[in-house]
Structure formats: C-alpha cells, structure tokens
Image 1 (cartoon, rainbow, N blue to C red):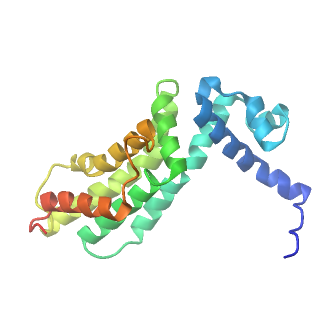
Image 2 (cartoon, rainbow, N blue to C red; image 1 turned 60 degrees about the horizontal axis):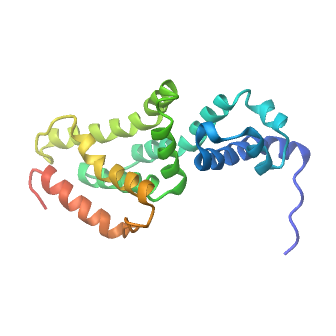
Length: 210
C-alpha cells in the first residue's frame, strides 16, 4: 500500500484545535484540572505551549472547549431519537440502549462523566450549561416518550420525574466503573444487562406487564 500523502500545512492547521482538545482530554483525565499543565498538553501534540494559547486563550477556556467537544455524541443521540419509529416501548428501549452504549460502554464519555463530577464545584456555570445543552434534551425525549405512552394507554400513569429512575441504573453502572474500574465491578455483558434492565423497567411501566 502506498504511503499516504503528508498533510498540507493548511490541513495540519485545520486539524490542530482537535488535536489539542484530544490531548487536553487525556491530560485532564489523568491529572484533573489543577494538576494539568498546558505544556504537557502541547507535548502530546508536538507543539509549543504558545501554540495551544493561539487557539485557546486560557486553560479554563481549553477545559470548556474540551467538555463541549466530547459532549457532541449526546447531540447525535437526540438526532437519532428523532428518527425512531414504532411504539413508545420500542423507541424507549432504543434510546436507553443507545444511552447505555454512549455512557458506561464508551471510554471517552465515561471519563467525561468523571470530569463533570470532579470539577463541578470549580465550574458550576459550565456544568450547568453542559447539562442544559447535552443532557436535558435526552431526558426531555425520555419524558416525552413516557407521557406519550401514558396518553395512549401503553404505559400506566406515573409521575413525570420517573425519567430520573429510568436512567438511574445506567448512571449507577457508569459511576461504579469509574470508581472501581474492573477490579470489583466486572464489565457487564451488554445484552444481559439490557435484558434485565428492560425486564425490571417495563414490568413496572407497562399497563400490561411483559
């Protein structure tokens, strides 16, 4: 196979912000915000510290840009949810399955969750914006599906806040994996987890349990 052509200077420049954000993610995950040094991020990319500051004026702005960059998959989940068809049960299963794949199953999103938790007090406004922009739309989709299922008689009447309970097992699995990795919490079999999860959820939610 022939060697790929080297990127042009313009192409390298266009890729630089993403390379910096990817490197920043690894350093913030490894060291936390306080322990991360911009020069270490620059070393990962192979540029000078000054180059990082060309694209991101401060470490705080770099951290915010990194959070937003790695949260984009949540927006994609909402877009996929909008295209789903079928019963409320079918669509809710699909959304929750995707949600499971995106958080506990995906290393980047899992570690992003760690950063949101650990740095929340330092950046409350950023974390609130992250929730409003990326998490709230997914929760709103779940709420809307539950209400639709209740209105059609597919689901039994439940409080609107039920969506918090719906996603709780996924978030609990994520947090346990972040705390213990695979030492005490072996990575669950995806199919077995979802099968048990849906069995418990829908036998409590459906007007006519499974």
